[in-house]
Amino acid sequence: MKWKLICGIPKTSNEAKEIISMTDVPIGPDTLARSSRAGHIYAIKTKSKLYGRERSVVVYTNRERGVKEADARNEALAIVGKELDELSEKWKDKSEKHLHSKIKSILNSWSNFIDARVSRKKEGARIVWSYKKQELKLAERTDGKWLILSTDETLDANGAVNEYLEKDFIEKVFRVLKTQEEVEPVRHRLEHRVRAYLFVCMLAYRLLSVLQWKLKEASGKEDSWERADTLLQALGRVERVEVTFGNETKTWYLNVTKAITDSLKEIDMKELLKEETRLVNSLKM
Image (cartoon, rainbow, N blue to C red; front, side, top):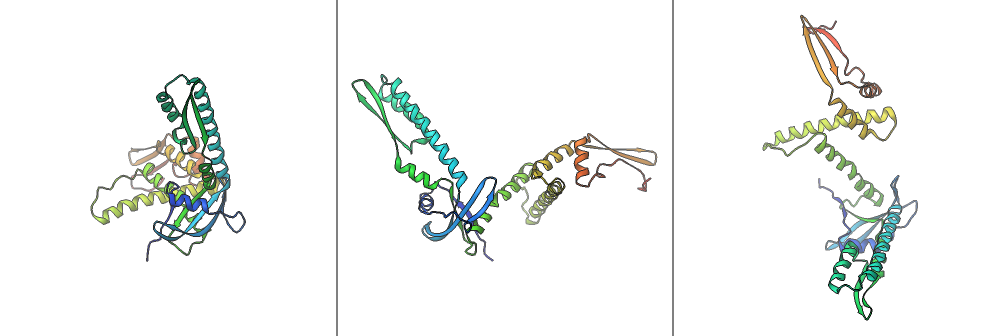
């Protein structure tokens, strides 16, 4: 059995940028791969040269995200243009060295989209600038579009997109393992000990998943991750007290809030923190 790879190709790659810009994703029911509150995703599978050879790749687009990216870029560039005009008026008596330094600080990460130079005239130094139309057109063709590479040829465009986007769930799992369950570097060398350590961690995550599922089933809401985290933090402050009087042992719990009680009742675990009295020989009274 061979491993199958699925990954996103960053837009910083010139090859990826060219594939994305040259691929038009049709908008229609047959290309709709996913819909959510974040927008509608359309995808198409194509063949292009990537990393030295012809490969099957998937280009997908989120139109809502694309509009936001374009609006944000246009707004930022408009502000940069205004700042350059103001600089040209206020700093015309300054040296070219000062102007170049100031221009660089204004352009910052937007230098790919703006040409700016200093022109010296009788009335003083002036800043001459213009938008790079070609770069803007290229950016427009890549707005809200991404590239996926999958070595699993059986996946169509929709399947590849959904498989790839599920990585958010996997990343969240690892984040929980490293934060809530505090998974740390393993100091064991023997394989069976490493496996045992990870088994305990995954078992803990399994229990957490059950808690999240029960909360979601009980409330019908989508905030089970947050609610489970809140409940576990509250339970972490609960203290179990056990006192023996003669042949009787009494157990009760401190710091049990109404929120904890309500949550446990909601998931049918109200008996979890129940106070009890038992005989030393474990016969319950």
